[in-house]
Length: 197
Image 1 (cartoon, one colour):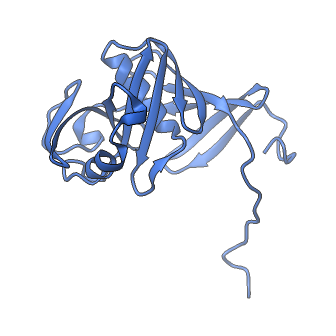
Image 2: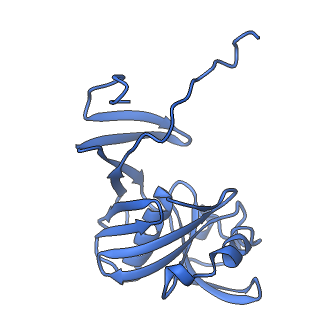
Image 3: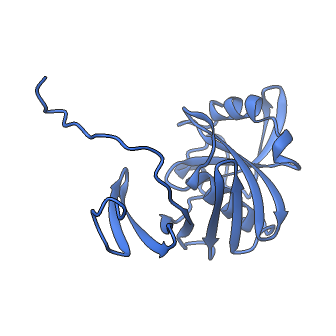
């Protein structure tokens, strides 16, 4: 929007499904957005058949027992901690967990490798889309799960196949912040649905 001359403000508010989001320009094509307060209650995720816990186990995911954290940040997430994100079985476990009956609305599945208390590597299998190069809410969910488990600090660098993002979370009842670069990836034309042929 700034590049196109639509605004010169350092803060803009955009409408998104579920409300509004404030995007803050940090300079050098970097931006920061508050993604909201994470929800951990299974009814809010939604995750059926469980009481709230730090982690959960499903014994029937592609023939394997899978341990994961689960939370919602605008949409549902399951986060699996893996030793090596490059060899994680994203192609099998991603779709199997995404569509597992316990996840009433399906789920985004993150595969997180903790490199240090302030750095993780992540691959995300997005519900309805498959593996993606980047996922902002997935990065936030992974970091929040790691902080809640006591394995990550409050400021974490998340390395995704498509680039690096920073996630900050001060703890329960606080919003999660995502920051990183924004780049133009394509140009298009918006056509009104009321336009006549």
